Image (cartoon, rainbow, N blue to C red; front, side):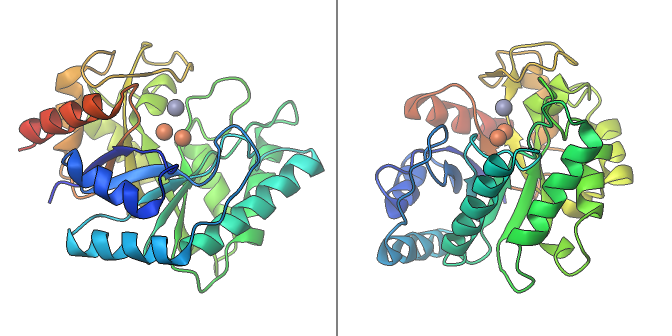
Length: 278
Ligand code: FE
Ligand code: FE
Ligand code: ZN
């Protein structure tokens, strides 16, 4: 099964996202749990969430990927920002328990001068506080491009965060691999897919990988910029992307597009990717 979807707006509600996904040929999707750059939060209606769950079950969807807002900074040394990130993430995870098997993706954050090691420790402490051992949602650390003081640019840093979470909670922690970010971070995922995934397996373990953000990049490998490009129009290229979606190590995972597109552009990319899938 090829699980492919894109980022959708939550503004019309939860069930509406499922219907939109169906209308563009997707069988999964991603959305922001709240305003990505603001602080407002509106809890979704239970009936709306259960209608989405029914639609997804009926149509054989892969789990939705809920993306935390950019305003979180789990690596922060500033108590106000760290507490806000912790409390909001807790709230997000409460909502997600109504979507069995949901995935939750977050950026590990920026250390803003305190150093990666301290940033990693702060991030792991936050995960220890928000994850409950019995939860059904998997919390995914996104691989980052390494712009500014972002942590999570290297597989070693991601591994260090996971290792710092206690054993009871660690099974609920996974990774979301963003193809634009890791290329920007210096991994040649497009041309050397096999070697990069082997490195991922050695350092983190492919059993910890639950989702792929499928993006091309406006910048060459190692640029540490984080500017997504449409599929085939960037430095990863169409051949590189085709190699990624067909690699047997990851081809069973859900792929989520975060390319600069409106809905019609996403529909075209999904059709293109289906045609490239072997
Ligand atoms: Fe992200
Ligand atoms: Fe991403
Ligand atoms: Zn990005």
